[in-house]
Length: 278
Ligand code: C2E
Ligand code: MG
Ligand code: MG
Ligand code: MG
Image (tube, rainbow, N blue to C red; front, side, top):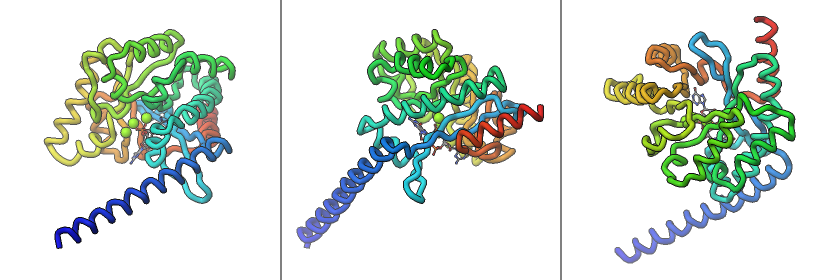
């Protein structure tokens, strides 16, 4: 009986694994096709200051597959494994290079952030490529922010630091995304030209649930402050979360409570309306 059971489990395992491989394979084909045919879109979500004024935005990739939107969490990890994150990242950089000058023509200090995966960041000539892309599109690099993850800081290679320094010399700034969820090498963080941390929404949400969770949220925000880093709170969905994090000393806020991500041109239209009503 045990044997039969084992065999069942094995065939079940094989069935699931095969399904997974087939799924990945189909998704890979679809993703390559989407990149080639230009089915990816750049959306933007505003970030606000303590007075709820728009001061920045984050660019987020969107993939429309026929009638369905495939969320980034469903394809970014795959794209990262396949190296397809490089062309996707390039598409996002070009999109931001087109929008940033228009946003800054309206509000001179406006910043737009774009997410950069570790594999993309470590790809050959990454800094050079960012600089050239913006030059080619006549876009100054001031106001560009790159959201990177803590895993880049674990790596001891000087290459990451050199890439950052090179971009920083051109006015690019850096933010640690999902701060507190990875394994930061805090010692290394001290040396990196990072100016900001984004407090992950998991901490924000949990922090409203219990004393214990609140202590953790407070600690993470305070750590950012003690390291002289700007603090952006992510995933703000309620006024309570906003007020609490503002009290804690976060300077920027991002979340559905303020604005949802929307297509770049719709977003830009709102930004210019804001300028008119100023
Ligand atoms: P992230 O960089 O932490 O981006 C914030 C995510 O939180 C976005 O999800 C955004 O839509 C969502 N969000 C914003 N406000 C709220 C809120 O109030 N509540 C909730 N529940 N969610 C909120 P999205 O667009 O699905 O992206 C998920 C992740 O995929 C991103 O997390 C980022 O890690 C990755 N990603 C997205 N676009 C890109 C990209 O162009 N390149 C790379 N490398 N990664 C990307
Ligand atoms: Mg981000
Ligand atoms: Mg984030
Ligand atoms: Mg997050």
